Image (cartoon, rainbow, N blue to C red; front, top):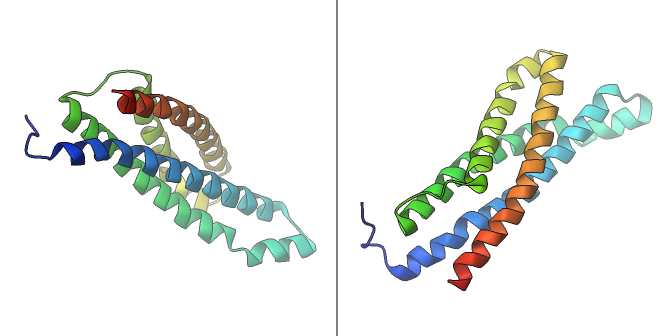
Length: 156
């Protein structure tokens, strides 16, 4: 399928939407992780610390920001692949694509644990934390490889 009906300037500009979205998402992911960590601290806190942490409403903020991260990551992953296909007529099979697909699977699995965590299932919490820790590590690596791809696009 040819996408010649899309002006060249727009096709070129589309190359930068996915990376910019993903960098913003990386920051939001770290923020959601911070909120989750504070919520985890609250679960074992006592006294004044517990009162202070309750005021932060970290459980609600973590749930909302995590939901936003899930939605943007799925849409951003599909969007990144779509733009690559529009501009090149194919996807480039490599580590960046595979890690991105893996990240999408990790975040979906992590989010799917929410009902169990709300019921107090500890293994679900630990799995959620582990999956998200792996996700952040992959995300950092994706950021580096993504910059390399953008630099290649700009140089061509």
